[in-house]
Amino acid sequence: MRLDIYQRPGTPGHPSYLAVPAERPIPEEATNTDWQCAARGLDIDDEADQLPDYEIGQLRRQLAEKGYAITALNGH
View 1 (tube, rainbow, N blue to C red):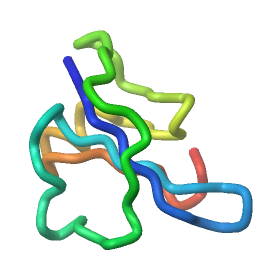
View 2 (view 1 turned 180 degrees about the vertical axis):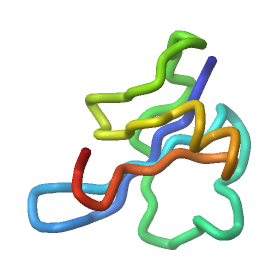
View 3 (view 1 turned 45 degrees about the vertical axis):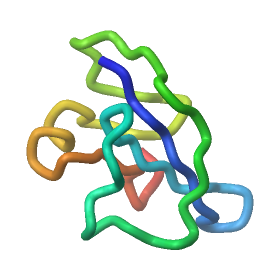
């Protein structure tokens, strides 16, 4: 699968990340003017369930339920 990754400031030195299927807009409930593009068209294995570089877990479940995946609040 291909994802676009966005980031925004989080706690000092620890940004939050948002993964959206490539070329789709950020879903309305997740829109925020702070999101900045971090990567476009990132190729991810279709079976991947973690994006450790972006501290995103349960990738497939989040994408299926919400249409996007986001960094956990506790960073895991």
